[in-house]
Image (cartoon, rainbow, N blue to C red):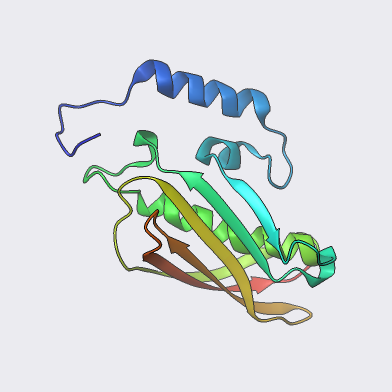
Length: 154
């Protein structure tokens, strides 16, 4: 999709995507509706480590026209959501559901197309409060955004 304001999202494709997310979702980690709508794929690393020893939650998803802002790049809200999810799912994998207390996001470059990768990790893990980071790259491996956050642990 270009930045031409007369262009619209393919309605049939958008409805099919929405219906798939609606039909496939479960209200649980990794499968909740918004994760399905964004098309998130989850990977916890190192793969061979026990859940309590995971260090990274890697998310990948394809940039679609439905996620574009009016300028044609990945919407900052979609970026923020994916980055927050990468951190929250890592917290859940290790200790159980937590909560974002605050999050700061720095946008480095626009994401225009292709596969987006996001990795959440702990900067400092505590019993009740943890400091986390998430980084997002475009399909060329260029850093698109960095988020830091404070999390209330379960």
